[in-house]
Length: 245
View 1 (spheres, rainbow, N blue to C red):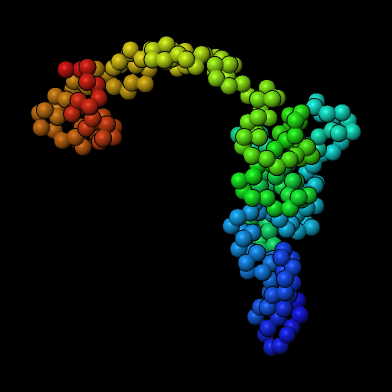
View 2: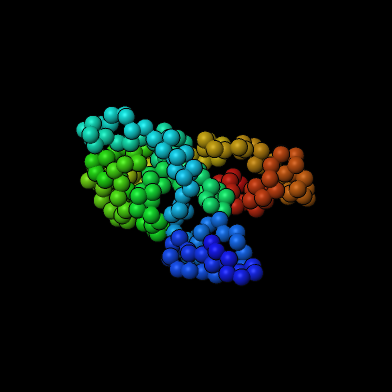
């Protein structure tokens, strides 16, 4: 950045490489206003990583571990840092040039180190036959449809009835009582206090309705039974426990 005159400075944007003029010398991002705005709104964070951030990332990568999907020369590079327990992919937290914290998938960060920023709707996928979710080496940019195609090709996620049988131990075409029995372990025909989630007895339901019919307010009944007012209201107005006279 060079001074033109007074408090006016010029600099070259590191994204569009055009000369820009500003009235302050402080520009930690190195981007012009237009590129900074586009980068923040339309692209995944991390197109321009600090050297410290990159070093911090590679310290969490193990390149010397054999994998089951490739020969040694083409082995996976395994992420050893934080892992998203739900999805099973690596997670990496860092701060950008403006000290704003970000969290990004480790494999997406690795892809952007080589290829630069990618649009948010673009997914970073593992190239078949790579089956290691913590791998940050065998990557390509694709779409959701590409991801679904790879999953079917690799046989990782069976769908339909096969999925239901493997992951839930029941057939997905079961309906009604058969579904309830197979999926939840009880019959849909169970009612009242016989239902496994029941919190009242039939005797209590009758007592609640007798009290309400006798002029006792719902709030008083709810406090007596240590229940929510809405719950008691549904009972006394026979919105629930309808089979109890």
